[in-house]
Image 1: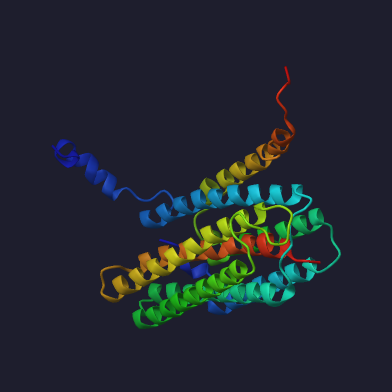
Image 2: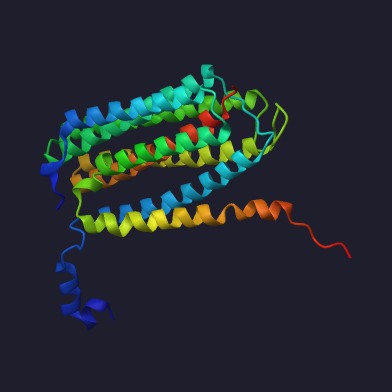
Length: 210
Length: 102
């Protein structure tokens, strides 16, 4: 017997109960996911930062050009994608579907550019002899392990975000999903951008040869 | 459900986006100054937290949600991160631990 058959009144009351935070349940769920993911990134970045600060022979393989320039372009692309995402959400809230879809397309494109730049950076490092357990410069091998793990985790979030945005754009275009879904996915996308604000300085700028 | 009327609008968001880019520029500038590793790490972390705060409040609209949402989410995350900071240094002690030789 289903719960609705046992306590129909309770189920209806629960369905009509207002949200304690004044937001849709899908948005609250996304917030709960974001804080748990923030703690995951917090743990790996703490681990990295302590290792980085406590290892005297830590390698510093990056130079202003091309690594930091590439990182700056990636930062510009990701920050700009947050702006296009905001435009997509604003248009969706105002019911301007075609404008929202255009901005969603721009966000997806910028996400793909970011991922491509990131993979290009990785392949250059592989060509230079870096890997999860190899360090061609000598010194600690933990650099490769931490760099590829943390940037890989972030890249996985970007690729997942691009896939989610494509699904949301298709669903929104076919009226299967609404503006609330666009807004909720936007939250996730901004979070991915926010994490990069820690990854770029800690993993790139802290490892510049000076 | 959200209080959309208080949100800054696209012009305001472009200003915030530009401000975030400026902070990234400051981070790169500091990287090439003669700071020690610990000074650079502390400076970059402070700037990253400022960026994250701006992103959280404006891009993620937390400033325009009910205060109850902020107070339910943010203190819990800050507490967990502070506890991590409290516990992680213990890893240094583990590195220097030795088993007693019989």
